[in-house]
Image 1 (cartoon, rainbow, N blue to C red):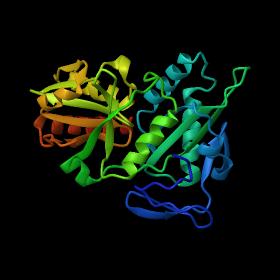
Image 2: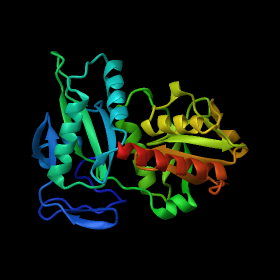
Image 3: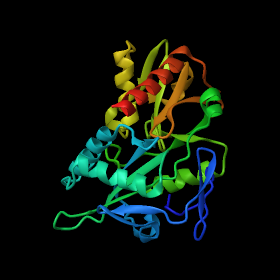
Length: 298
């Protein structure tokens, strides 16, 4: 989604006196700032649709009360993405933190997501690093209580191991989500196996065991990694295996994971209803929230 593009889940107006709605409150944003190669700049100087390539590398980092969540894990994944395309990191973790905090300070940011983009790769190995506000829209308390609606969608992420822009997939899923009451689309591959959400990872629960797609077939989300770690630390068996779309009814519950949704119960997958009050699911939600609190306290 472009920086100044309208989204159905938040309020934002471009131009003079533009505003956005975050955490349920309208905030006037007269001059939004971004960071380009460690330099503060006006948001209008970079627009994803106008200036971004179709294959930029990126990370989305959540900011809670001005603090970055799981920042080191995001930095390490960015390094892996760059290594995958044989590029080296040309900035340190401390550099990323400095720029992120500069962005937070310049925009008076409390709670939002930061999008960090690496783009415009040049022959000498140099590239541009852009940090901008993501204008995140988070699930509501009702979404966490009642769960969200989803549907299956036949599509394959071409490079699941790489956090890279996939414009065609994003445009296709955005169009469906915008014109429906669905919260997310669950991707199904050519073998009729579920892989992940269009912008999230997915887990299933059966008999207190946690199931999710094999790592090699999905985007290795930071939240996914943390959930697997937390579950195993607390005695839950986590099984990575192929989950056929026709077998979804064999599971008790399911949930989405991601930077914005955290651990989000699924109420339905198409016409199939899922148990949003499953005790294992609710325990994992609590465990993950506690992990967030510990991370922010460090």
